[in-house]
Length: 532
Image 1 (cartoon, rainbow, N blue to C red):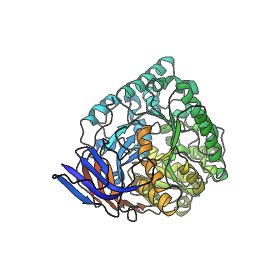
Image 2: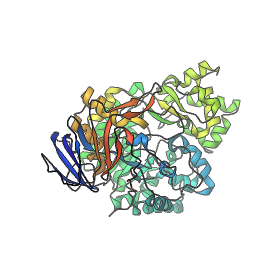
Image 3: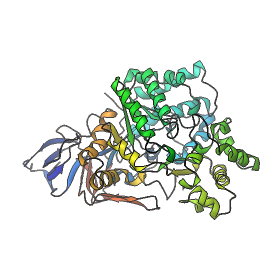
Image 4: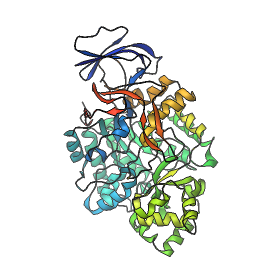
């Protein structure tokens, strides 16, 4: 079966000027691109006049690790044009996990990955084998996270790695890369990775240097410590000899706006000038999303996150948290101080009693429901929800986000989280059309062709997906067709959580997965673990 898309305005992914023409798809591949292509007798001919055609969007940072195990329909992804997704980010991957620490690990990651089924794989190998046999709604790849590796070996202990543990950590990384993991992620901001030393990272990541795949880094601090944190991951990548991708690159905290992002960019560009392959990514919003437990000062977590949350159910524990979270700490960003509790919104809560706080700032929730202060409410939520309470930090300045978007080596991500909630961060549902609409067509921060490149060819190149991200003969037929005046996001921070709309057609491997905003039910996606 062939499909001829006729008369579209073609954005080929490479960043050059768009042009009008036809694209012929046969099977899984693009067969021809050009003006006035003849229609084969067996072809479905689509009139694309007035519409834009581009490669399918590639989201290299989406915390969808668990979704393929749950009968995933991927409506949130497909409706916004995502055709390839990469999970295992921020050091928080589904695997590996080990029985002694599994329950605590899954509770910790619940606000990011969502609930994990009891029969979930516990090694990268078993995960890859399971997904390699699955019919997927879109193409899917997964990194291994160094946070998960550490927890599988040591739980949440702050103790240094032993020599034997470091060897086992490096072996975990090696196995995942050998099985096709497109990279390795770290989450230095998070427990328990914040306890890792430079030497420990260099040792466990040494397989990356041999494979030449990227380290994607959620850096240690994105506020007061941004510049030093960028310098830290640059040193790690240089020591390992691997490419570096700085995840959701941003500057947080009002006192840092308009200044620190430019200092951090200077450090990146100095590293690029001396030969390090370093790039970055961003999402098109001024609010981030994470777990409320990231507000726990590390000193309170010496016995693990579960123990810290348990103490928050006592008056002594609440007072201890109140005192600790009102201070600043070297090497750890305290958003309770740099942002304030009125800019930290409650995004997810599993318990019915806590749903009344959804969409409210922690400060407003405390005032409205009779808590003595914001710290008392935060303590209540962490005690009752554990790691399952997600928050949205309104931490960024639009001009800073625009500066990152303009970088020629930056690419778009969603950083979508999958906690069970009906008030998700809007990036879950609309990051890609929002970027094209708001940053290219409306505000002109980047050109439309540059925006498309940041969502297609650049991420494809970053992770070695050589057969996609471009409209050219021989490329995989992952294509999107839409009226640029109609394709838009429909989710925001007000609580509106609707799917994106305006997508006329989405093809994955030549099969239609969306037609006029409706899923076709086709599942042509595949696990991208097998690498040549």
